[in-house]
Length: 484
Figure 1 (cartoon, rainbow, N blue to C red):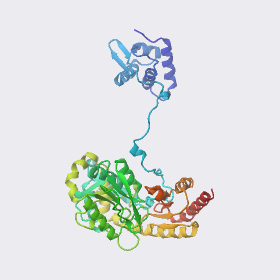
Figure 2: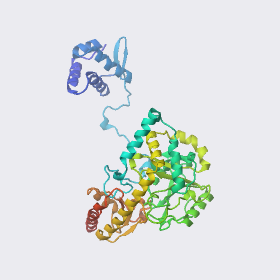
Figure 3: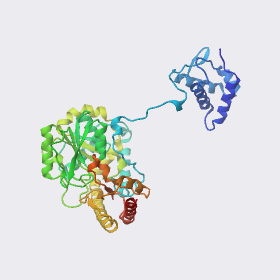
């Protein structure tokens, strides 16, 4: 047998001494593994017996055997009655990783995704889409969650129904009937991890790669990302003061994404005439409308805008909602309402694609809704956001001296400020250094040539006492940017 000589034991002993904080078994295992990977122990060479290794290294024979058994189990050694022998690694394996040209490129579809800034914790000022989480009734939520765990115990620790917990689906159906004019059965409701998973699920259920999807221009980049990653071709449909305007010259779509009650980021409301026209167009062309009911809960004047889903019978609409904006983002609970025609046919796919989960949170949320806490919280937040929006309008008028126009003024959690002649992407990058996180308006467009520049200012997470100082900081950055 070709048994390693004393330098081998010298190397082992030195390595064992250098690995502070690790067990002797772990140290010996790692040292031998590295020696095999680096070619210090040649293929087919024999290691000393466990008794010899234990004596030479002054460690337990059980420790040696445990390390050798682990290496044998992973395929680095072969052990039999004769001893332990080093396994031959593939000849194509390169021991010098610095010489290996590893391709780290993403698929072309994912490379085409629009850039998204990181989510900050805690959220920075003016971050769009973030509610006033410090106003959420956390003690009440903790009590409801504790009650669920105490009463239902380990029964809620399994996967659960792929479509979500039945009590929550029932509670959502009742809430939608009262607040959004949507009459649906709880069986039509599928619980998702936020609205974006609902968009992803729509692409999987209703489209195939290569088909066309219409998106609002400007519009929500989450939907664009979902469609691009699903291999769909995007067509931007311009948005004006009446919302999405049908362009019959565009390729006919399979999916049409719209946020009719409060368009993001312009804030326009899709007019009744355009809603009906879009519904009829979808029917004629066999398309599905994905209705994102974004910020519909926070309308500050007049009656709530009815959902498209409830305007006509058998509408070709999949309705999406989320509790991320109304309660708190990390809850990660949203929902979709399937048309009756899809309920049965979609069940096998839903069971295959979704696994259930968050069962205790879903059941606590069902109680939160059924006991009236959700309606009261929405009313309180509506009052808070109405006041903050008015104060932000006032602060912009007083502090933002550069020429600008303000959009998205009828509700929601943000105001959009269009400002000509700025590189809003660079401005947003610089603003983060001042703990400000508005979004760049130009990034909401598919076609850069048609993009307006400006800032999307979220006020849900920002106290009105901080508005003036924050806007002055933005004003200084804009002035510096233009001077530069």
